[in-house]
Length: 190
Image 1 (tube, rainbow, N blue to C red):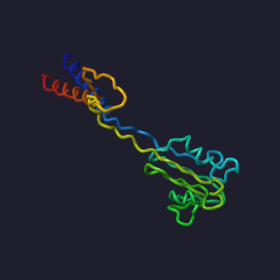
Image 2 (cartoon, rainbow, N blue to C red):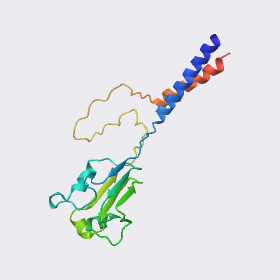
Image 3 (cartoon, rainbow, N blue to C red):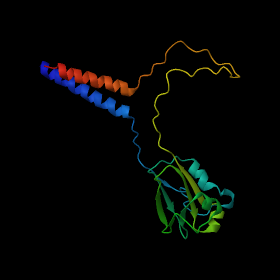
Image 4 (cartoon, helix red, strand yellow):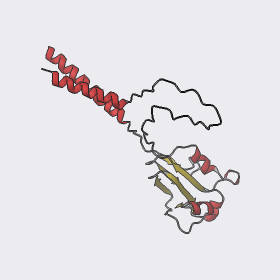
């Protein structure tokens, strides 16, 4: 019976260690999302009183790398253009052009994506879209535990430095301790 108790403890410790390692790597998992441009309106020329509708729609959403935009339209087209062509409704040098009525564009990098109608008059009347794809979050190393030296020439007074030391414990240090405990347990088992 003692052998099974040790084995159960060992298995529990192993599972806990694996979970701590997975959590400490802090790898985000996010499913890609497909956004329908203009929602129910679709990709069409907006009303004269609502020419900013596409960019307002984009500002209400958060776009990530891997997401895609779905354009639905009739008797029109979608052009992917650079910043200059976007602001000047220039249709002569698109990066990509679509005219099949239903087009899906994958957002494959962070930063701005510029879309206009293939009809310059439609673009001038507000049928254009600027989407900003968010950069992935990077985990930055912890900052120094000690505050910077006060600047003697500073115009405003600064708070008095504390004599205490800031201690930071991260999940990675906890996971290393658990792994060390696991290895010690393995080596000490009969």
